[in-house]
Amino acid sequence: MKFNQVKTDEDTVITSQVECMFGDYPVLYQKWVYDGIDAESLIFCNEDITIIPLNDLVENIRKSPLVNYPEKEITTSINELYTFVNFNFKVN
Image 1 (cartoon, rainbow, N blue to C red):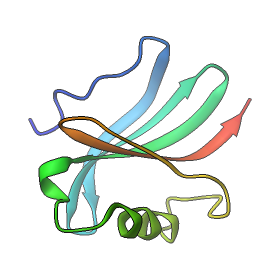
Image 2 (tube, one colour):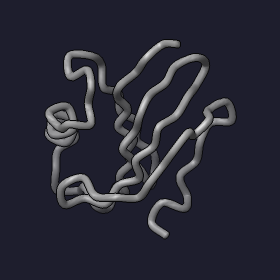
Image 3 (tube, rainbow, N blue to C red):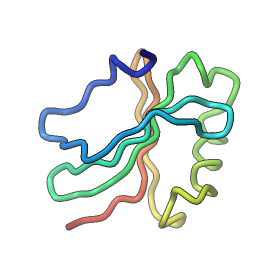
């Protein structure tokens, strides 16, 4: 499985997730809660997105119907296997 090595912080609760596609890219889509914050992530395998600059990828996500608040912050983090793009932050 492409996303079987995705790690979650101990204090993060995944409320739902599904493997799907974002355009031409396979992704793991997650909704999660951490410390009173609800948010969503698209997780990409680094090897799948080598040809697209990260800024372009983030802008494509910002313009997509997934993002409820396009004017708000979208964060990214990258580890050795995956790139995480986090959006729709909402404080409870």
